[in-house]
Image (cartoon, rainbow, N blue to C red; front, side, top):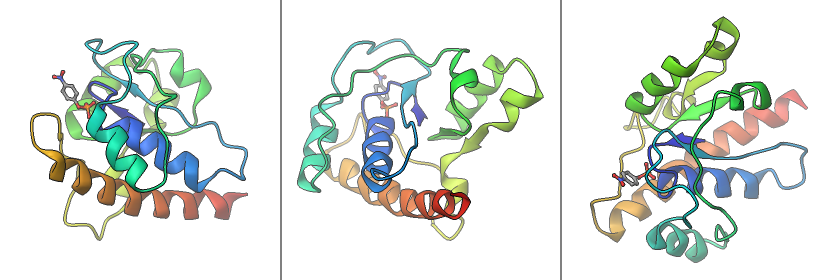
Length: 148
Ligand code: 4NP
């Protein structure tokens, strides 16, 4: 799960999907395309909205996406088009490119085609992101379970 700072959206996607797949053998992680917040806890508003929904994301620390992540993960979900474009520039070959997805493409019936950046807004934006990511992770989790 990849966003810009790895402190707002992708830590929620990481925690939510991990929570839904906890009895499975999936390695789920998140990263940012930018380096601004490396080593930091998720944003306090992401921590709060996750906690209100029974998910603890306080063991996460922000990191920056690195090329070797293409060797570790089968699916790499970008929260928006700009982060997807950044990831495409890091891809080394067709195999890497084929791992890249726009997260909201998993949820074609949603009114949203990307996860809006809540960083500069108020708490309601984090609740909106939580609901959007939760709904989309239900679809991703269902899709992954079909492959098991
Ligand atoms: P995120 O949100 O990409 O969902 O983690 C942001 C976090 C920090 C910044 C922008 C977006 N920033 O500009 O520092």
